[in-house]
Every structure is written in structure tokens, then in C-alpha cells.
Length: 189
Image 1 (cartoon, rainbow, N blue to C red):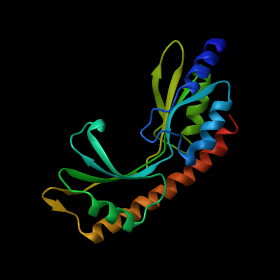
Image 2 (image 1 turned 30 degrees about the vertical axis):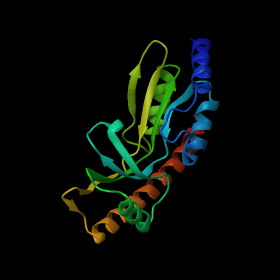
Image 3 (image 1 turned 120 degrees about the horizontal axis):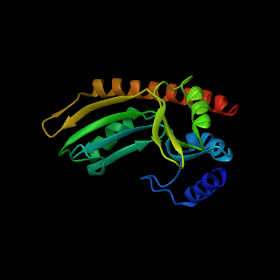
């Protein structure tokens, strides 16, 4: 089992990054490297957290235009400038999304250790897949903002968007703080 998992891990980690960004977020790199250095784990996908403006043409993720994406705090002026440049035809959403991490585990014991460690910081951690080859754990933060700010018939006022920006930045900082604490915890796995 160890040899099969090690081969699968090696093959998976050699694949090119298929994310929209095309690379691992700098803010989660230490966590990724730590997991991938351990024989019982490897990461299959990740996001350090982000603040985005997107145009939703439908509920399908593939049918959204990303107007602004930041894996850091954002200034109101950046949001306002992005909105001014974009012709609004559909719903425009401001979202602050938390850390999300998928980790493949070699067996149930490794998965259980990871879940116990994860839930000290991230309450929404759980098993999302169990196969003969591996168990996949999803670790996800709970700090998020998700609000519609415009569509073809209305636009939120500047004060409201400033408030949303402040909340999104506050949550982003909380998410980063929890990620740092999580890194300390998983060093002990």
C-alpha cells in the first residue's frame, strides 16, 4: 500500500497546475510543501483564500468572468476601478473566500490524525472521498463574504461596497492568521 501511495503521489505532483491562476498561491506554499514532504500525505488542490469580483452569467463556475482576483487584501479603489472598466450585463458579486485544501491520506489513521488537527482551527474539515487507494480530506475555513453588488438593473452604493471591502479584508486577515496556526499544528503530525 505504501509503495502504491508513493507512486500515485509522485505521479500526481509531477502534473502541471490546472488552476485558473496556473500556480500555487504564495500564502499557502509552506503548508503545501509541508504536507508534500510527509510520506502519508499529498495535496491535490489548494487556495490560500482570495477576494474576487466576478460576473455570473449562470450558476456554473465555468460561466463566470473574473473581473478582479486578489490573494491578499484589496483596496476599495481597486474594486471601484475594476467595476468602472467593466460593462455590467449580468450579476456582479464581491466574494471573499477562505482557505481550501484537499489532502490525500495514505490510510484511515493518517486521515483521522489530520482531521483531528484540522478541526482545532477549521471546523468545516471532513472526508470527501474514500477509495482503496486513498482518503481525501477537505479543509476549509469559514470566514467568507458573498454579496451581489450590481446587475444590469441596479448597483450598490459606494458606502455599501466600502463596508463589504472592509469585512472582506478583515476576514482575509483572520483566514491568514488561522492558516499560520494550522501550519504550526501540522508540523507536529
